[in-house]
Length: 140
Image (cartoon, rainbow, N blue to C red):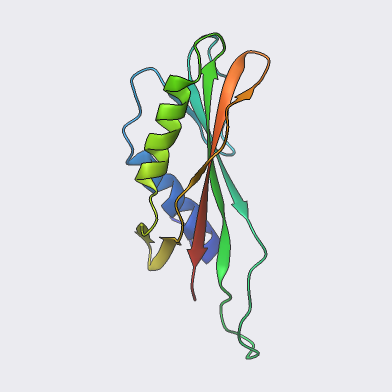
């Protein structure tokens, strides 16, 4: 079923654009709201859509607000394999959502207004995590 609201279209557009990225063989994807169990020793990317408060620039009621948020793609790499491969994959995802990217979905244009932020690797119990924060903006 296709999204009918702007909020749904934004999520659909961001996930669809990510789906156009060729992940290396053996890298899984944990989509938001979908069941996923990572396999021990195999890398994966976890996706999240984080909405921010809409901005209403007009006093007139009935006008759509500006919408903005962060699309988070966190690369999880098995511990003990260093940080190079995880950071490299994170940077490739960031390049796929480079500043100036326009994602068009069902009449909505999602703008990527700044280069994605690639955070420092975070050591977790069995994984090395490298978060990629992609800031998006939708104008009315």
